[in-house]
Length: 145
Length: 145
DNA sequence: GTAATTGCAAATTCTTTGCACATAT
DNA sequence: ATATGTGCAAAGAATTTGCAATTAC
Image (cartoon, rainbow over all chains, first blue to last red; front, side, top):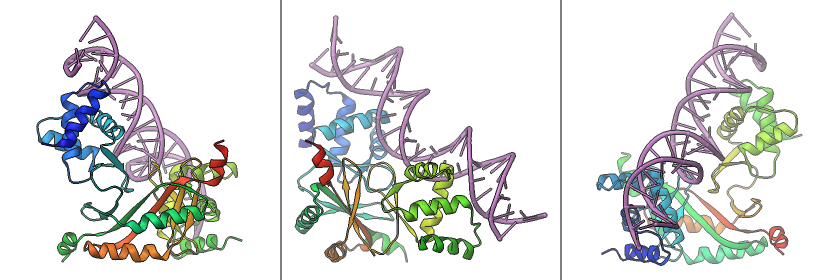
């Protein structure tokens, strides 16, 4: 079903790491989600599926998922981190709704070029960049009658 | 000397807020700094000037500084916040050296346009954006012989 | 004088760690 | 068997808050 979950199991086996039910359940939630979940979101989702795991285990498994390259960590300055499956889209930016917290992705080639140029101008060796656009999504604005 | 400090004193008086030595000392450090300080940086600098104030007071005064519009809060995903005097430059972006933590500012008109367009495309009402370019500065690379 | 601030310590939030017990291979 | 993971509770780091003592106006 979820091929990314398969990849994770393979990763674990290749690295001689035990394939535990908790790891699979956590990976299933994170890799299967379309959204950008916080550690707490993951724990809550697990519970609602009847497959609870301790928060500590959630954090530890997410760490493995990140090392495996299947998940990316994000910090939108909300006071906690979010985790996103490293799918298709090579590098992309985010729109964050400041009301509902919904995260939308987009990609724009120009940003790669611009940031690379700017880094050069400042004699920085560019490692990466992060752009977040803050605003309110259409749904939330509708609610604000 | 520091005219921003004067503005802060005026702000306090206009709002019937006591002008305390702690507030002035903290404002002097934050407003007078060219860099992007953390709350801890501010407390440490105060101590080194012999004008120490409790960390809680530092946080509370920074809050007032932000409300006064003289200081802007930044979160570069380092696990703590930084504070920057709201000087001249209207809106600007940051380069962050991942070795020494140095922050460099730059401004690029194109980013305003691009982010506004993208927000529109996603039917977001844009409130603002934040761009950080991560990399290593020239000085730090020199050290990495 | 009185209302507001200060400082300290305790509380909070997110995340990490230590350790006894359980489990995958 | 044995190394590794898990859960819980305690520890950490940044920030906030409650409250008695202090200070600005």
